Image (cartoon, rainbow, N blue to C red; front, side, top):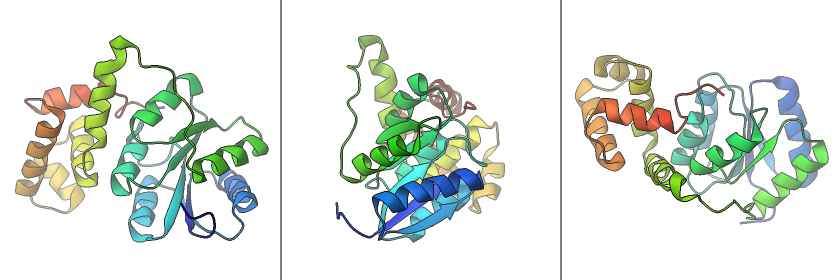
Length: 214
């Protein structure tokens, strides 16, 4: 990864914390351009529109996000761009989950600015914090998370609609597509997840924390 320039997306709904993140970013990479986003939809649009995006700083608790849906959606939109989650969620639980859905690291909002700067610098340099060995009983969870991470942004949005209990026609309205298109995406989701129906897909995603509040 280029050590200079580029665009860094700072996605957090709290203006003061966005300012703190931007300060940390500028101290690590003063020649970058920063794009701000206060909602998940704005973050996804910015990620899609920015060709020279080099990093995403993401808060989990943003308008439009439930659980780790923001990580999953942004990773699906820009799979090669590192995502560093900066959140007040319980690090012991959230760090592992965030990594499952495509984040490269996690840092708590209770950390001081120096620690946040170090995490940003490490992520930009390609460093990935070591994770504990996967316990045998968690292997199926990690396998399913990998399948979820393989979904396209639109497929993830369809799955999230299913998690919210919305009908195909309602999801189609939300996404601005036809009901037939939603059905086609749902068929692809079922195939990628290796499940038979919407209920199984929703259970798998909910078990992974996508539809849970954090």
